[in-house]
View 1 (cartoon, rainbow, N blue to C red):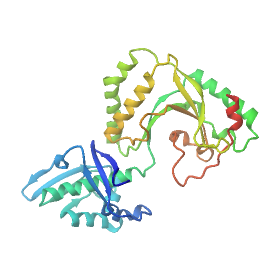
View 2 (spheres, helix red, strand yellow; view 1 turned 45 degrees about the horizontal axis):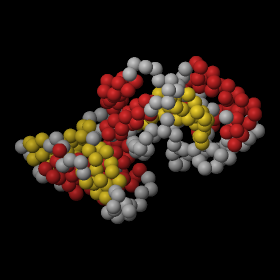
View 3 (cartoon, one colour; view 1 turned 90 degrees about the vertical axis):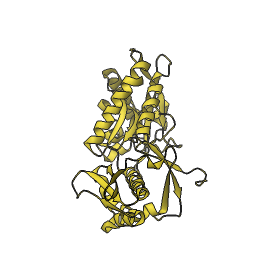
Length: 319
């Protein structure tokens, strides 16, 4: 099945097909030396020679702008990843020193070798970017006084009537000042990427957001709550469902268009075909991490995170 439907990866606006050649034992970050050997990539939406390759007196050259946090994955343990890349593609790869920003420069006698090296570096960077904790999220704020007041009433009622239920305590409730509808999460590793995201958001506003909103306020209402897993007695995330008061799909359309634009730019990973508009109200991540409000999403958490679930059966009966 993986051969017939290989993973597609968006790198810099290009779509690549990732074909598995052999099974790779992948334990931790220090094993990235073997990663690109176990995978091959093929550009499927445009010729891979669409890169900006400069011809010089010594051959061919191109540059890649990546955040310095990703350099270590291109270098690899004891420099093995870089050495293997250079050997396989017959190129020379120059990477800025540790702690310094700058472009990775690839030079070689063969143009295809330079293109191959660049493709592999971008694939490595994209793969390890996905392993970083997200730094920003795109959302609609719900921090209006009326909403905050209703949320605090909900919290008070749950604590007064369900405090004896397993796992329910004050610490797992969302901060009312940070209630929001999540569109998606981003990993922005330097100021350049933050600026790029801001510019993209502004262009979305000009291209379609203002037109869809049509200068009218978009009033939403809470229409119940849902939980993440199949067992209401073992819940990690409880979230409020929302819908437009006028019954329209304007908010959903804006969220979906924003998600599509950010995914196509490579700044956001695609988790669903449509954005699931939701507002987290209770999350067990908050129990151990006071800053988890900043990282709250619909996802149940990263592998390895220890969580103590709560019994939501009586909470659900209140609504």
